Image 1: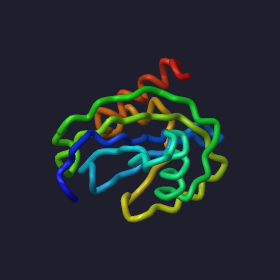
Image 2: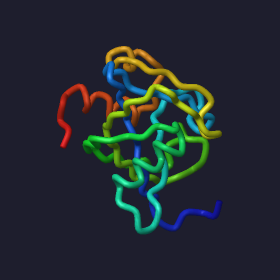
Image 3: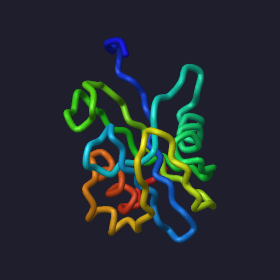
Image 4: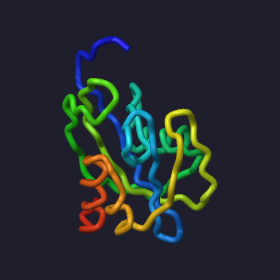
Length: 139
């Protein structure tokens, strides 16, 4: 991939099942950390559309009832496998299915309650958004 010219807008998707458990993934892009599905916003795409698309591509799940959590600035953080500048736009949402079908971006997944998630090795950005969800400050 060519060097970046501008920061890249990306979405993070915090998917909850009917039991109130959240989906976390392990990805080679975030070594030894749990993260959520997500990725780049494409040209002409709204943030919510990107979240729906990325969730489907990375997990096979259809999501709905999106609520904005927060945005975070990620500037050349060494926790990611490449030197990148992202702007994360995170959303909480729901899925009816538990049938996760991972693509090649993640190697494993787990459904966990929020309090249990905080005891796992999370990347700091995922942790920040989970704490916001627990606080209940969603729009």
